[in-house]
Length: 302
Image (cartoon, rainbow, N blue to C red; front, top):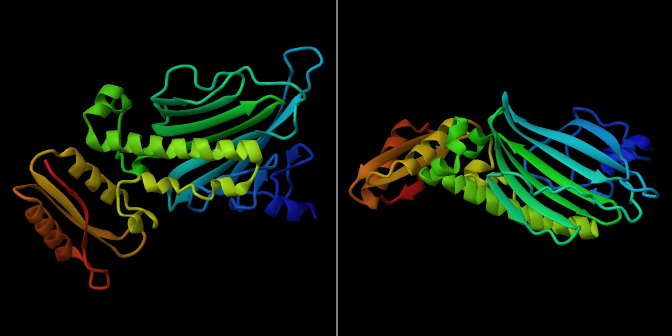
């Protein structure tokens, strides 16, 4: 019975990590943490670790609150894509509340919807040491209630190419169209998640997450492409074309299977039609016979 609960229910039992969970365990829609549903980000996320902390009250008579955290990781082949960390209170905490400020400090993006002692915050940061993007939504309220979702994502897998820390300064982002567009799309997606997880925090109903799209939708590429295991080379081409402001430019592509996308691009053309025609021709020249005909993936004006 314990094994069945661990596989298809709450990931913590009696304030302890549930038994039967290991690195072969995939994140399922039926999994919860402290009764809170967990967002399904898209892709096969595998269990990495779990832990429990007991918070100590800041005043006499307060109730200690057990907090559980579970970590899932997504890889594609040998490429590390992202990490999902979810932390929540496993039991209520009397009249206790949390005195942290999740929106405090310096962040690349902040969206604060907190009210009084109720925290409701979104932050987005570039982690310079690991060269990863981190999106965090935090909710807390009276009664020791707490729910925090942290996404750490490989920016290369979102179409940002290999970058340096200075590329993520606000001044650099502003003058780099592909990176500015990525930050905007990721922020918009994060705000959707912030609102959806607030509903989860308030109601513990899983249908609050039904309308949330996969994190992959922030990639500036056709959706049939981002639903497969993506070619980072193709994402780099898309970013190059976005950042090249000279003339009309276009990218055409043909997805065969995971990692086997064929593409062609054209830049510095005199018209949209010419750019698309040349991009299609370059793509068709290298397309495998078993692959579908090339189509335009991106078409931009100067």
